[in-house]
Figure 1 (cartoon, one colour):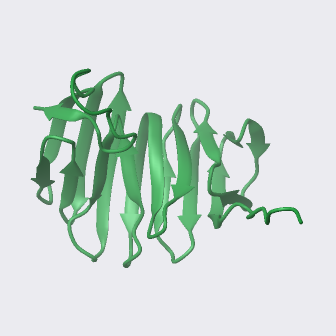
Figure 2: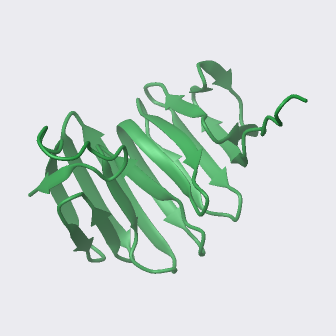
Length: 171
């Protein structure tokens, strides 16, 4: 018998203004997105990811993100550029940027901007508060406030770094 191969998990749909790609193929509005997909936007373009459950992620121009699903949540890994998380209910996705996790502080409506460039990270809590979790500490970003930080990988000494949430944070 052959082992069962599980299909990628359906996460939602992408809606495009301008030009965006899913896994290097041009995406049109309504394209279905799955766990493992990489979404990229071109200059002067945006992609809105409407996830199952109604939460959304707006991927800004010249940005790239990879979607995955753990046992309990969707993770949007921002590889470059910027995005806005719009959470409407529980089951909110977690944003990962430069090895740091960003999520709303509570199960309530939140609007959080996240931007990464090289080893810099910017988090702006437009509505609701955000929690920023690095390997060395957690920081709450209150509504209306911004966190500008530099991320650095864990020291090469000691146990191996974890793949997510393993960066150190300095303001």
